Image 1 (cartoon, rainbow, N blue to C red):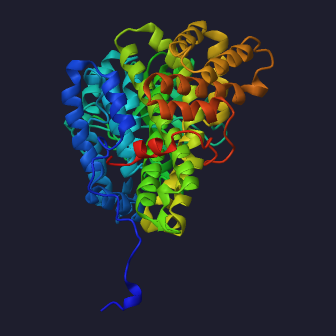
Image 2 (image 1 turned 180 degrees about the vertical axis):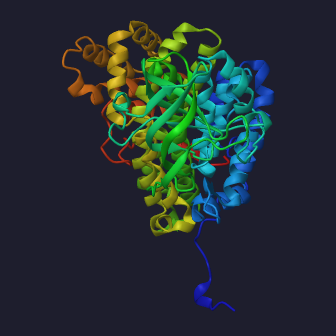
Image 3 (image 1 turned 45 degrees about the vertical axis):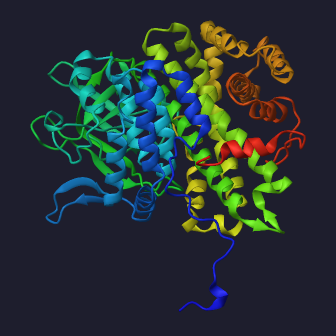
Length: 547
C-alpha cells in the first residue's frame, strides 16, 4: 500500500488516446488547402483514422519497444553459412507494416498522393521515426527506377503496394517490396564522385558485377537497393537485389551496424560488394542525374520528418504546461511560459506549412506543371537546410518545458532529442544544401522566377515580409563570392518563403508573430523572446493537441 507521501498530484496525464491529425490545426488546414475538393472527404477520413492510430497507447508502446530492443546483425547461421541478416523486434515489423498499409510508400499511384502521404508521414514520424527511413527510401526509389521502363514495370507495383511482405524472397514472389539506398563511401561522404566501387559489365546487357563498399547503407533488410558505382562509362546508378531471380542470395556482406546517436530502431549498415550482381538504371556515366529525383524526394521527407518531430515536441510541451501548476497558476497561463510555447508553436507551424506546400508542388509537377517543378528545385534544398536545422533547438526547448520530467526516458522527450539532428545530416548536410541552392540560382533561372512568383503572392499583406523580400532581392542581385555567405542567403530564402505562406494561410496571430520575430527582427536568439504585445494565448491554443 502506498504511503501518503506518494500521492500523485500536479502531473499531466499521458498524451494518448487522441487523433493526431484532427488535433493538429496547421496540418489539417494544409491538407484541405492543397487537395482538390473531390478528394478531401476520403483523404480526411483516411488521415483521421491514421491519426487515431498515431495517438493510441499501442502505437506509443510499439515505438518504445522498437527503440529499446535494437536490431541485431547475424552474419552467419549456426552452421557457418553466411546469411547477413538483421533481426528486429516484432514492434518494428508492426510499425513498418502499419506505415506501408497507410500508404506511406504509395504517393505515386493516386491523385493528391504526395499531399496525403506527406500528412501521414508527419504523423507517423511522431510515433517512431526510425521506421520512416525504409518508408522514405521505398517511396523515393520510384522516380529513379522510371529511368528504365522495364525496371519500373517490374518493381513499381511492389514498391507502391500497401502490403508489407517481410522476408527475403525473389521479387516476383512478393506482394510488396521495400528499397534502401547506398551512395556514400568512407573516403567521400557527400562527395559521391569520389566513389571507388567498380562495376564490371557482364555478358547479359545491362547487368554488372560490383566490387567495393558502402559506408552508409540504409535499411539493409530491404528487397533492393539503389547504389552508385563506377562503370567503364563513369559513375552509374545500379539496382542491387538482395535475392536473385533464381532464389539465391546476392552477395551483400553486412560488415557491421552503425551505433547511432538516435534513429536507433533502424539499422544502418556498412556493406561490402564482392562480385555482387546488379542491374544498370539509366545510362552509364549518368548516375547522379538518374538518382537525383530520389535524393530530392528523400530531402522533402527530411523536411516532413523534422516537422513531425517538432510537432510532437511542441504538442507534448503544450499538453504538459496545460496541466502543470506552479506558483499558483497553470504553466501555460503564465506570461513567460506562454511566450516560450508560442515561439515554439510558430516554428512548428511554419515547418508543417512549408512541408505540405512542397508536397503539393510534387503533385503538381507530376501532373506536368513546370513552374511547380522549377519551384521545387530551389525550395527543396532551402527548406531542407533550414527546417532540419531548426528541429534540434525546438525539441530541446520543448523538453525543457517539461523540466526534469522531460529529461527521463519515460517521457519520450529524450528519444525526440536524439532524433532531432538526424535530418539535418542525412541526405546532404547543411553546406551541401546551401551549395545546391547556389547551383540552382546560377544554372536554373526558372527556379528563381518560380520562387519569386510564389513569395510575391503575399506582397502587400505585411510590411515586414515586404521589407524582407526587398532585402532578399538585394542579396540576390550580386552572387559574386556567394559561397561564403551561402548559409545566410539560404536561411533568408527559407524564412521569406515560410513568411509568405503563413501570411497567406495561417491565422493573423500566427503570421504576425512569425513576421515580427523571424523577419522583422523583433525577437531574440532564444525561444520565448516574442514581443509581449502579440496575441500569444491564441497561438498557444492553436497548438494544443486535440483542441
